[in-house]
Length: 346
Image (cartoon, rainbow, N blue to C red; front, top):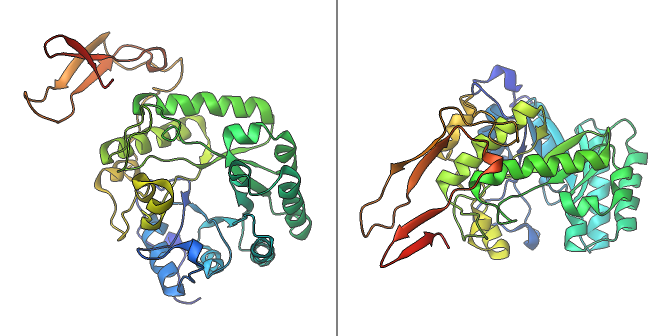
């Protein structure tokens, strides 16, 4: 391990984020094919993101992924180490035993037993709890949880009870929420979870916005919206003192085959490891004021104005800004006149 140095000895960005979901796959590599990830690839990928984050979350422990916590710990990062669980019980057992080995070696700060297994229907509630309890028994002193979509988890209070901490996945994009209401949506759903789990710590285990892909409801992908969401979400998490893992470090081309074109575009870095330029604002420490709560007020006098009106015949976006209101209480409707008045988008 002499080739690795603690993150404190590196030149880090001014504002490291709380955590990143980390997956090292590159073009042509699909985890569903059983590909084994080379150690050098893990080192290179972690070296790219390590100066920008305090923690990483992983999603599997076999096929070479068990090397991630070794390198990450040597780089001074905290690790939420994940075991991928599905309907293949033989593979599940390999994942669980590898996770236990990692935790017993002191390489896991949190053990995450499965990701969205209830959402997919891969395991029953009782089967998932059995895996959680098995890991808890094997690694006393290490917090154990599972990661699940917030509303699915709320339907399984027994799973919440079995977890030491609560890891929720929440994606306004997949629920078709418009970008200007996305973090207000998270704020309200987080409060729902908090009410249900009581004093247990809640971690946002996944959230993000794709920089390309197809529209889902009122949620529009694109680089501008992805950067806007990143900035707004991190601002919210800082203001509320909430721990999180942002999804995700790198674009992953293999996901397009499973989630559509937006599946490959969730990264803060692109697939080749280049930081998407407008993401830098967060790492420079920029934040936005409260625009997510009923108490949050956009600064300035009451008003709405256009900041850019595209020329006739253009397909560019209309831009504007609103001041002096509580965003959670209002919506903006845009109409255009083309042989009559029409609202856009529909």
